[in-house]
Image 1 (cartoon, rainbow, N blue to C red):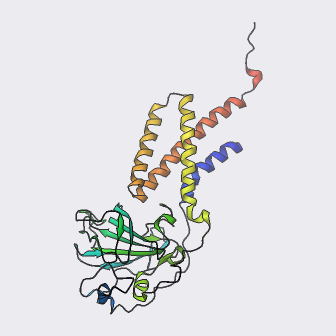
Image 2: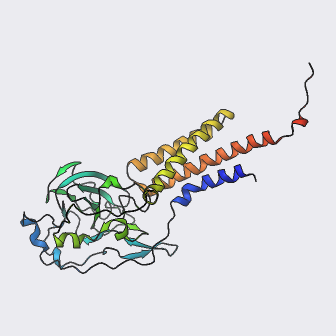
Image 3: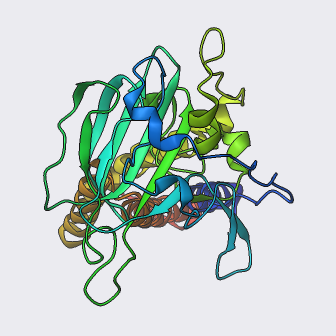
Length: 322
């Protein structure tokens, strides 16, 4: 196989390999937090933070899943929880923890309805998952501390289904930076439940510590310093491969009538784009990578055919007499 074909195969595998990352060997355990005064935070307007749940007894309930708790994928690779989960009944009201701007309010695969609030003055954003898509929810725009965001969803609509219900709970995350400081896919994505990197290293903060400390560092919270490629690499690779795949499909479609393949590719890309735009990252990213891989296979076959033509012995071509 020539170098050109090896390079094409490498490019076709890049988007799949780019999504793979190794887990970190150690992640610090969450800090112990005294939540006995949490129920009083909403009534004190001098405090910058409050917990998003205000129901009586909140301060005595254990976490359903704690921050930085670890679980395991099917392959045995550990992942870490980038938020805190609080178990409460469906319909429980959820409020903004601080002043800010709702930058996202909409469906999210696995999380029912999701709300994200940017807090520019604090250099934070807060994330509220497993809300109800059937009950009222807030629209994007300015919001004040303690303002209603939505309600916890029923077990069959909060990311679960009738066949696989999910216990009602709030997935509450806090991260240094603003939502748009992070990509939409990869381990550094702006919406994350379980991730391979240690959450603290990716800018996620322990929500109960942030709220109970009631402390704002001078200049706001500092987002982690990380290489541009590590944070945005998956997004860049996907964009490049989409461009390369599009060019490959256009070239190959001109070479032969392959309307069925082109139509299937366009349909696949369209579905992937819709899912990604509607923030269904897992399925959308899978279909996007599948589309990129298929397109680059077409490009590989086209280049192989072109190479075969160039590799033909010119002496075998008959000379036309005048």
